[in-house]
Image (tube, rainbow, N blue to C red; front, side, top):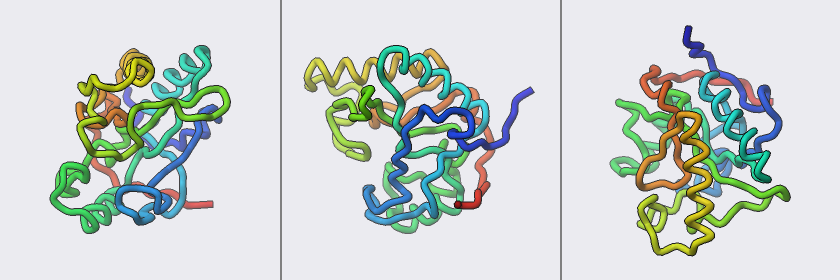
Length: 183
């Protein structure tokens, strides 16, 4: 039976690094839209991500998370700030983030330094696309490592954001407005 509850990723594993950009002003909206920097996901999504991270740790890397589950109220706030773009989903339909099935992430080395992925998180030019081939061999290898590792655990990328992955078994979950208390 599918467990659709939400879980704070750090209750499953402390091996993740959190840098939740929308809990700061360091994002493309230039505004803080989350009350606190916690990463919640559907339980099965979180377990799959934890398994992918365990594999990466064995190779000397770790996952750094920029965004996780996003309550529908936050999606509405984002839409009000930047309506009608390809980068903020219309809250009437909701996004995979609103379902607890999407994560925005990167890889870091054993010292916590981000690997070079060719662009920063939330850079919306063609250089952020998975198909962009003019990056250095190092960047292409880093993206390949991230994409191939996550694919083993049922995470699928979208073409225009190297950082965005969706856990396929959960993408049909209902849009949620689940909220948690901040410490």
